[in-house]
Length: 564
Image (cartoon, rainbow, N blue to C red; front, side):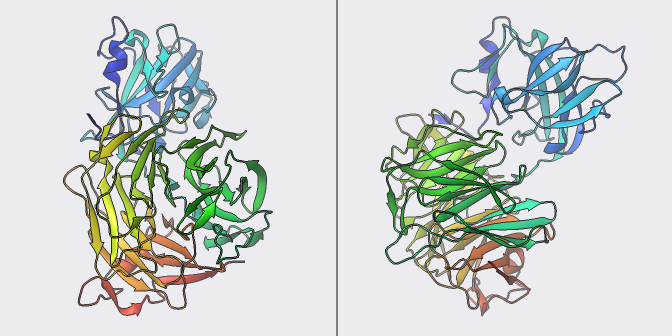
């Protein structure tokens, strides 16, 4: 049994595989810089996205790098754990005249500004996970691509190499960058796209196939904060059920009940693809071929839940300049979540199903995924959707039909994974009952506003209530628990259908956690400030401590947005 406190890869295994390898630091050193490339060996950075690598000092007489191609990686300062989250093929730079001149490879990292003083173009190190070092220290490695260097056949992130010709440099990040908006959101109906101070929402007009519902085609785009677009209804030939957005590229992926996949920029469909889905699978809320889409903005990938020849499964869509589908794969458990979620920091797909199996899929090698199952004991309802605070690894799954609401909560930072076909996983966890939370059809939808430790739990198929939740701000010790919650109603609102019409994000303007809910006809959105909702001076509580004293939320906490 392997205990995984965090999804980091011990590098010592790779290093010892090379004869003569040692842990001694190589010399001369690599150099980190900022985006401009003008500040050499800066070493202290505000956020993870501020760190770039170049070729070193600007004076022409300094010892530069031998020309050629190099891999790079970020580790903890000891070099014991790999923190870079993408494949080694994506982490390549070119060196000419002793300095880094840019990124190369099939999925290159972002570039800095050309520096005429030494002819270098720095390359961004992000994405990489947070270091567990007490001083927030990291190490960058530059590794020449030669006969001593190879990429692991089992994990494309890991390199085997000789340290004799590597270059390293330590640096410090004051504030690790949170998961970008759009990532770590379940494959529910809604998505938000944050661009600077502007926030837009993509609102599918449809839902899954259900005998009692006549779903509409099309998807609408509206301003939630700012006025960056003209609110627009976009016509589609098929019924759209789910959307997910990448703030780095500005691209949104929307999936239809059949095999259609629409790529959007702004208010325009730029490409229509066909997924590898076939047949249909069913949930308590309807049936579908494509069933939902979740975004991994760090790796620019989308994951579509679907029917794989009538079996529940998934397919990864790589969203590079020429989008490419990987092969679809079925779940060995025979069930998937109504709203699955991908954690880009841990490369895990979270899929709690209505059969109360919480499946985790390791997508580090997405063409050959590893499955881990956890049968959750004794919930009063059915696990309906996935949620996670990806900064802490606190995972959630509300239990549909339970009353009062129940939410399964687990600490993935303490998870133990047992390999197998499929494997299994366990973690400190509990099925927590939320008193005074009574939602339509029970706790069904969930979303966490990344970077805030706040989230929302909703009902479905009607009802006007929602529950705001506060999650622990740290993990790694003990059994996790929701630390506070409150349930209120929204006057005149009725929850939508499946997939769940809810998402959450951190406002770029107020900094508060914000929930978005769409009504059943997708003609209006409700924007709820979750921080204010949980503030007892703004929303007084019932004597029981977890209900709104006034019943409905005040206008200072919730506002309505018309959807064309």
